[in-house]
Image (cartoon, rainbow, N blue to C red; front, side, top):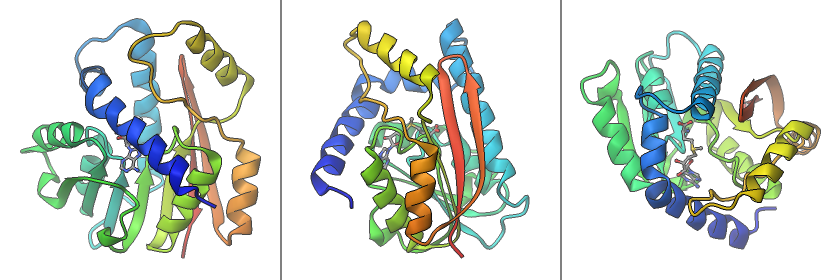
Length: 230
Ligand SMILES: C[S@@+](CC[C@H](N)C(=O)[O-])C[C@H]1O[C@@H](n2cnc3c(N)ncnc32)[C@H](O)[C@@H]1O
């Protein structure tokens, strides 16, 4: 069960991090500007994850309503809208949402994206045919991730595509190393998830698990999972 306290506390930390502390770094990472070696591997990994998620969605998405939950600077939302879907792209960070809308302006599909800031779990957003969460729940505890997927599933007609940080020895080492070098702009902790545990709980809750795909690129590890809600 979701603990409102842990969810809200972590949500506040995430908003501060993405809206203030890491805003400039995140803007650079998600742009085409040159970045350092480590960040280049992260960028390549994120491109691979985005392309993988897109490969799981129909090529023609006209008539579909899609939620990009935790849209960041909006690349996935825009790519989905370019396939014809009507997209609600929401993020906690008003600054990232503003940047996303600026970047989208004039691009194919831009007119089909409604960018807004707020909580992706807001029931007022309505029903969707598909929900995508690319690296949007990596900072939440397992119980909160499961509760978030459960809440979204009740309002999703077809599919939820989400990614998580898989619990692997390599990720464990990277997280430990990261903690050995404290920095001012430390992000909220990444919460590694056991794939088996996620599968078990989601299946128990009545969800059907579809495809899964792991991307590992330098300091970036992310695993995508498809939840079929229809
Ligand atoms: C690692 S970033 C990924 C952004 C984007 N999905 C991408 O892949 O480029 C995670 C994003 O999720 C957003 N986020 C986390 N929890 C959220 C929530 N409860 N509601 C809305 N956005 C949230 C953060 O503000 C952040 O921009």
